[in-house]
Amino acid sequence: MAQIFVSYAREDFELAKQVVDALANHGHSVWWDKRLTPSRGFDQLIEEEIQKADHVVVLWTQASVKSEWVRNEANYAIDKLVPARFEEVSLPIAFHRLQTADLTGWKGEATSEEWVRFLSWIDSAAGAEKISRSKGSTFVGPDEPNPTNWALVGVFGVGSLVAVGAFAMIASGGRPDGCERDFPDARE
Image (cartoon, rainbow, N blue to C red; front, side):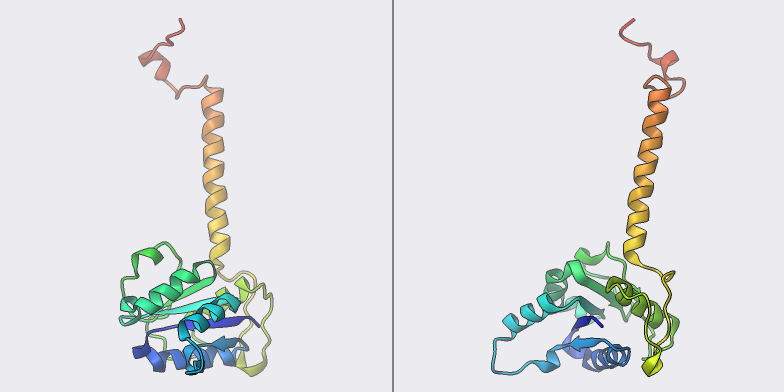
C-alpha cells in the first residue's frame, strides 16, 4: 500500500510508535524520523521523504500544535495531508479548514470505529477499493467517508444554487419578485 510519512512532536514518541505500528499492521509502509541517521542533514532528508510519501499523517496533540517542525512538515505536505487529532486541541490556523480525523481517546485498538474510518480516508485517498482481510484488517467499503467527495458535493451544490438563482432572475425579467413596483425601470 501507500507510503506514509508520520509527523509528530518528540514528546509524543509513544503515540507515534503506536500509530506507526497500527498503520504497518494494516499493510502500509511507514516512514518516521526514527529512521534518521547522523550521516545526513535531517531537514533535507525529511523534505525528500515527504516528497516521496503518498500521504503525510500529522498527529495533532498539545505538544505538536506548538512544534514548529510539525507545523512546517504539515504545511510542506498540505496537498497530501491526512490530519488526526489525538487530544482536545485548537488546531493551528492554517489547518482549521481541513477535515481532521478525531482520534481523541484512541488507545491503539485496530477495530475502533474512529481508527477504521481514519484508515478508510488513507485507503480511499490511495485509490484502494478493498483492503485485504489479512493481519486482522477490516474491510472498508466505498461508502465510507471520503473528505474529497464531500468537497465535490459542496462545490457542485453551491454551483447548482447559483445556476438556479440566475435562471430565476432571468425568468423574472432580471429582478427579484416585487422589485419592479418599488424600483421602476429607469429605461421607461
